[in-house]
Image 1 (cartoon, rainbow, N blue to C red):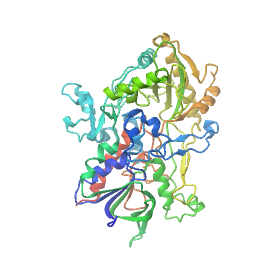
Image 2: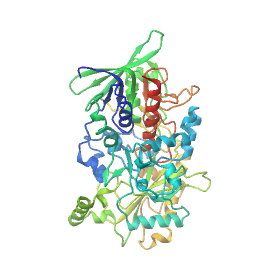
Image 3: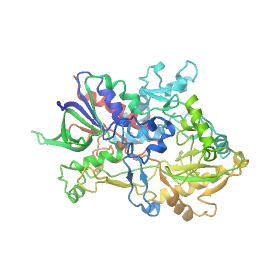
Image 4: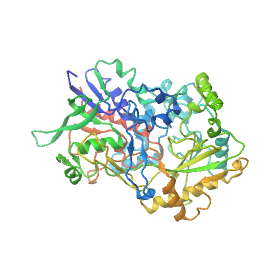
Length: 557
């Protein structure tokens, strides 16, 4: 750390940060520093797909956040996993490759006043780094599919591998058939702009191993560049904002706690916050950028009163319906004996397939919670297992879980510092189910689940509703039960949202630059003005791809 001046400083080595490091360090004339609070991704459970069970709630890989008690969840607090390692949440997430719906991005364009966020304009950024298995061989996919997806053989940079899952389950095949009987069409591609349908998710894996952004974008590429430097186990404590001669303010660097000392790193061009939708607003607030009243309450000097920092938190809340079944294999029973566990381990060791290669959810479905919905507004994650919560033991009876979430919640929450100390976790208050619209969708979605399960395709397995229970039928009952059993699906966004000058709560402009502070951007899921209609990892990569282009354009030569 003898030379602590860089052209670009990127805070957070997760989904967005890893890609940004790759793109910005490609110019050998620019020095790039990556600051990551966690350790390297050399923990074996990161790379074995089922290892998410051992990474969530583990201080080796997780920030161990908890939400504030939530009225919509009947006073419950939830575990709130956030990746604390290289690769960030891509090292502990569900590995599902999902872009969302075209209308999501058209809405962003409207809210930001910038057409570069329209679906047609973001599609090339998705394709740019994608390496889709269906395009590995010529003529294996249709021209229409090839026009939507990327592959190294089709000219993409090819870092982000997308593969089909290496397993199947009879009970999930039956659920897919039941969904079709209930009017949900089959689909083999959730990523063409409208994701309505049912099918198996495609995943970010390579030959049965988790494919995180550290493997994709940092090594070996960045590690081999002389102009790239990385500090791990190093937590950003405060941004440095200096007044300029023209009266403006500029972010010139960051103070970093190494575990032993506080070091100051300086940036010639930009500091880019990619610490995620929780940690990025926290660091802004600790640095005096945020709601003035909140900052003063905790003894933080106000540098820039920006009320939207930490507001607009959105997340997907999943309601986990559990059904007992008969005469069909599920993971509950398969993993209940030493012999079963040994066979699972052997299959993975020999073939990189089977339950150890599982994403948390295998089968997906997108549909409408009621006939009045104009588009698919709920998403199913269906699993051949059941448990009370992630990290808890599997139930001792055969069962499957059909988790359903509202894709477009109207509830909004907050992320707020609880002290002026960078070591202290922020208060995370999602405010789930706080609007009548969200409560109605919750009740309606449970009825959709029941309608699917009642179809003939599942009848031979005699499904019996274990949770929430058939005795709950009214809107009031179902909403209350949703509050009792629902949990986060780990998709926080929106806490440093992009927006137009006319929006007083917009933290960023359309190119993710912090309003009122030069030399500072936020490039992560917090920049989303509204949550995407699906899993949020790959949209965050797309945003980083676009941001890298804009950063380079702003600093030519």
